[in-house]
Structure formats: C-alpha cells, structure tokens
Amino acid sequence: MGKTLKRAIRVSCPGVLNALIMIPFSSIAAGNYYDARNDAMGGTGVASSTFGSAALANPALLTKAQPGDEVSVIIPSVGIQVTDKDKLVDKVDDISSAVDGYRGLADNFSFADYPKLQAASGDLAKRLDDIRGNKSSGTAGVAVVVAVPNEVLPFAFVTKAYGSVHLATDVSQGDIDYLQGVADGTLFPLPGDQDRLTSAGLGRAAVVTDTGIAVAHQFDIAGHPVSLGVTPKLQKTWLYNYSVSVYDYNKSDFTNSRYKNSNTGFNLDAGLATDIDDNWTFGLSAQNLIPRNIDTKEIAGYRDTWQIRPLVTSGLAWNSEKLTTSLDVDLTPTKRFKTQEDSQYVGVGAEYRLLDWLQLRAGYRADIKSNDVNVATAGLGLSPFNHSAHLDLAGSVGNDNTWGAMAQLGFSF
Image 1 (spheres, helix red, strand yellow):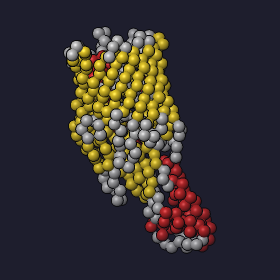
Image 2 (cartoon, helix red, strand yellow; image 1 turned 120 degrees about the vertical axis):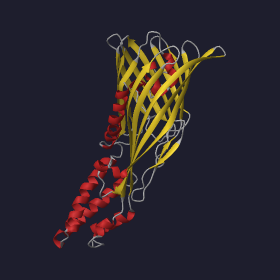
Image 3 (cartoon, one colour; image 1 turned 180 degrees about the vertical axis):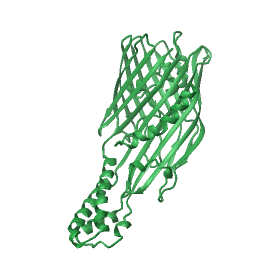
Image 4 (cartoon, helix red, strand yellow; image 1 turned 45 degrees about the vertical axis):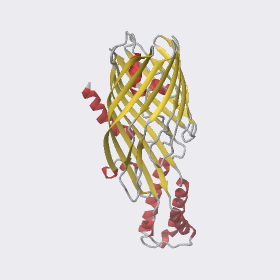
C-alpha cells in the first residue's frame, strides 16, 4: 500500500496543475481537499464525515467506525471547481494571435501595409483594455486514503495533492495609448517600438502535497466521551511564478522549471469530536497548524508569497437512521497567495439514505467575506455488492458560470 501512496503523489502533482492551466477558470473551492460525499453536502464534514474519509476532514472521526466496519480504501477522490466569468485565459490566447499579426506587420513595415498596421494596432489596444483588471483563479485536488479501524487507536494513511492557480494582468496605459495613437494616425511607428511595450501577464500556481498518518482515540472526560485525532504530515509545496510580457504569454510554458521553486516542511492537522446525545455530534478541526510563508521566484520584477495558515472549522451534525444534516463554519479565513483576497466559508448539507445502497445529498456553501462565488451542491452515493464498493458523485453550480465536479471510489474489505 505504501507504493500505491507514493505513486499517487508522483502522478497527482503534475496532473493537478495541468488540469487547472488548460481550462478557463476564476473560482476557488473551499478547503484543501475534495471528498465527493462532503462536497455534495455543501462542503461540510467536520462533524458528519464517515470513518473512511475522516482523515480528510477531521481525524477525530476515525473513532466513529462501527463494530462491523472493515478496512476502508479511497482510490481516489478527485475534484475540480472552475468559473468562466472573465474568460481571461481565452482572452490572453486571443491577444497572442493579435500580437503575432501586429508584430508581423511592424517588423516588416511598408507604407502599403500602413492601413493594416493601424487596424492591427487598434485591435490590440482594444484587447489590452478589455483584460485590464481581469483576474482568474481555480482549484483542483486528488486524495488517497487507507483507514484501519480498531477499538484502541484507529488510524489512516492519507496522501492528497491540491492545486491553486491565480492569473492576473498588469496592463500599461502607455501601451494602450501608443497602440491607439498608431491606429488613429497621431503616432508613426518607428523600428523597435513594439519591443518597448510593457504590459504583463501574471500567473501564480501552487501545488501542495500532504502525506501523513492520522490517528485518533476516544477519551472519557467527566463521564463524557470525547475523541481527539491528529495527523502529522510531510508537506511539500511547488510554486510557479509565470510573469512574462502579455505579448509572449503562452500557458503551455506555465510549468517550465525556470519559473518553479519548491519547499518541504512538517505540518500538523488536529481534530475533536463528541456526541452531544444520540443524534447530535459536534466537531472541531484545525488544518495546517504550523504557519509558513513561501516566496515564489522573482521573475521580471514580480514576486508573490504563498501563505500556509491554520484553517479552523467547527461542525455540527444531526443523525438518524435515514437522514444526516450538517453545518460547518470556518472560524479562520482561507489564505492563498498574498495577491488574492481571503475567503471564509459557511456550509450546510443533508444526506438522505433512500435505499440501503443509494444515498441522495444536497447542500449550499457561501463565502461570508463575499470574495468567492456561493454555490449550490448535490450528489449521490452508490453502495452495491454488500457495501464493499462505494461510488460517490457530486457537482456544484453558482453564479458567474461556476461549476464543479467531484468523484470518489472506495472499497471496504
């Protein structure tokens, strides 16, 4: 199983980033993992996660294994959330085509082609003005979990990779004025002028892998059972700072080693869970308890900082034979690159076990800082073959053409 986890890390790191940079996006998903059941329930899970996925949301819930539960394996859990509000990636691609046409005329200038150069300059000026102030961001993730139940110290091997990409533009008004002046005939282009254009496309990406062992134990505190869990983990971070002239921007160059640096360190997740009565469960989780700032490489005068900060979330769940409802509230903000605004989420969700092998789920997640799109979520779970196999599917939808998709395959043996 150790080989499986290591292989998952090697495969997931480039896969997570490639999944993001090849599509248009501009939304951030909550948290730093994807779990199809929890995501379908509004991104909740601190008090409502199952034993098999507890290591992702709250390690204390590993003690929730039932007497008949067996070893649980998630291979894998995957997800992505995107928005296509400003279509920044497409716009930059279009600018690249417009630049090729403009430079071809400017580099081989002739008076016969002057009207064509004016038209190309005006088109490029318009495109630059259109992307000024545009920003895009997105997330994707993959996880593998092996959870082993026992009455004394249940534990789980967990590895996950999650990626965040942030795109922005630094458009120079001087570029727009020059290009528009050529288009209007008030400026005459001189050889080499096109090389003095300074507008930049700024791409930031972070891929983080966590590999650790979650353990939990139930204590009796003043006659009340309280479960505590911890996940010591090795955390590796790859940062990409693709800051280049917008006229040379090519998303296929995003992962070039010239723009990449990495950092490895130790971190810790922790959690608490307790049953208030036969139906109610309270949970508290804290991810990344050891804060760290990691700087990107400085490229063309641009640098950013990836922020790893504790994310503390409280959760409350109500359970019956057929129904589970859940509420999660972030007590601290989610931080990413310093150039990005923080988010802080509240999620609600429900699961109805329609049949012994079929579960229906729905929820809603909102950013109380109003920096991210609020989304409605839904999904289903299938547990055929005497519950030895589990397939969970989820989706999310929100404003600004936001959508997300998650899938999870699990086995019990």
